[in-house]
Amino acid sequence: MFSVAGDVDLIGKDGVIRRLVRGGVFTEGSLVKVGPGGGALLVLSNGTTIRLFPFSELWFTMFRQKPFDEKAAGTYLRLGRDPSKSTTILYLRNGLAQIEVKPLNAARGSSCEVDTPAGDIEAREAVFSLKVSRLAGGQLRKVLADCLVGVVNFTPVAGILAKRGQPGHSDDFSPSFALGPAQQIQVAVRWDPIIGQVTGGSVEGASLPLDAANAELEDFDQSIAGSLPEGPVRPPLQKITGESGVPAGLPTVPFEALPATPTGHP
Image (cartoon, rainbow, N blue to C red; front, side, top):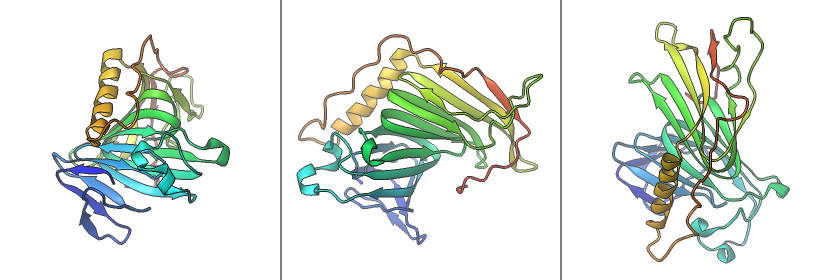
């Protein structure tokens, strides 16, 4: 845990709720819950940096790392790459997170996965944002993923693309999609409050306006630079240039009549 503002709670595996403070330590199985007006910058020992916004809820499903020389490595935030094999699995239940994954030690089997109720992101070296929106009653409404730097792979939750929902098509359709800089994927769901489950929706790919994507990058850079008054942790992220286009193979794909899909989290 590197910095915190406002109300941020840490709920441990044991269910005990503690106020999260700067320098606090969180462990596997913990839930970080950000209140209205709050925010947090979380840094893992592999250099992965997570910025959480108000009303966000993030589970640390799994985080494991082989021992390394921490004195030689210095501050986690200043790590240029993963210092040893690490396995990261997070789950964003609600809210907005901006995440920077430093180059992972792929040769040793390092991996980073961020799950949501509608799909999962895998990244080895990237900056991206994830937003999970819910209705007032807590029902899932939409999941939005923006890639800003590098490439991430987005895989819809098993069953959420059960059918194409187009005339003449009933084949299974649940592949992974590669998102590059300034590319976006959105999963919008339709919720039936009577039966209490998702009944349909659509998956859509889009290109982000470059000014909007670069504004996200600049905002993320400033949030990290502002947390270390003694100087920047790295050169600023390079701005995105050129046209990004729509993620390959991803038109707007409707889906419907889905069974409830267990995710392991509410």
